Length: 464
Image 1 (cartoon, one colour):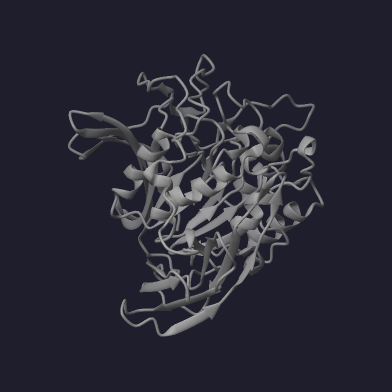
Image 2 (cartoon, rainbow, N blue to C red):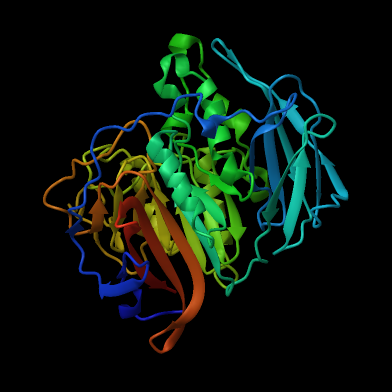
């Protein structure tokens, strides 16, 4: 379906203290005057209650789920047992009191310098019914723990769905506020996570105990709804001085992705479909030059997108392609040069990135005319281009990225250094003007409390 140019202009939604949204036409070039405290946050101590080890012998911990296939009727259940392998069985069913189905997974273990992991279990449950609540149990035969999740609606063009979007979370007091705020939204159903999880590499010897504590910290969400994983630079854990020369070793062992289902040859770039969205995950820190596996996969993946089935095309990366913050400035430039023309050709709707610890949203722009001699190297408005959104401000130990370039570039619609917040993407179908079109609403909600109510900003953007 095609919408008019006017309909494709973005509209800001200001989230009032009462949580009512009012709208104004976005004119661009807004730098928020709001500033959260600038000093870096502090990681919570390991004896904090959010890191508590569950009671019972060899009790499963660090439970998390992610999508297990392309279409959403499979999940990967993962957990860690600390003392011995125990069982890799998952019992599940649609009745809390009758887990009548069983699936057996596998377990693995890894060593990183002077650290040895617990026993990491992964079990893929397939052939689930869409839009159905399932209960499941792990730790069978020892200390049993029970959780639940809900599968998404069947993929289709008119399926409303709500995504939470989080990046660069870490495990500080601000991280805890961010996660609590995300959990308080009853409509968010799946997290699109744009990289940088535990920040364990900020500790001496990349202390992998901080991988364990992070996974226990987020279990209160990850055990109940899927988080779609993107690898960031803090997942690399590449440290030859420690004898660790395998990139992504802890992340790869702990967090599985359904990459084979989308014909990917690597676990860090893949795609899933969920409700009305086709979501492509790319790896900033894996090779993406011409002829590389990631390049070839994306070249084959984009033509497969069926906009009559999934009108939304969303891309997740870690390093932003458009970034007017001095922090990590232009680090995403080489990937932009490789792939931006494809994003315009296939009309990607929105690209989410992390890495920069601030928030920024672009207008629809592209910079694909440059051919090394014509000097056309300035981003220009382009109705076929994505909106680029940087959301790497989840609350981690490194602090805010508050030093923004001046003047604000014309492509930058809104930016704000507001450390510690969650972002929600709400997909639905509704009437806009006289045309029936798909609409994206992005609510950016801050943890800053004023008179007991959160403040925040957002925008509404109709997309064909």
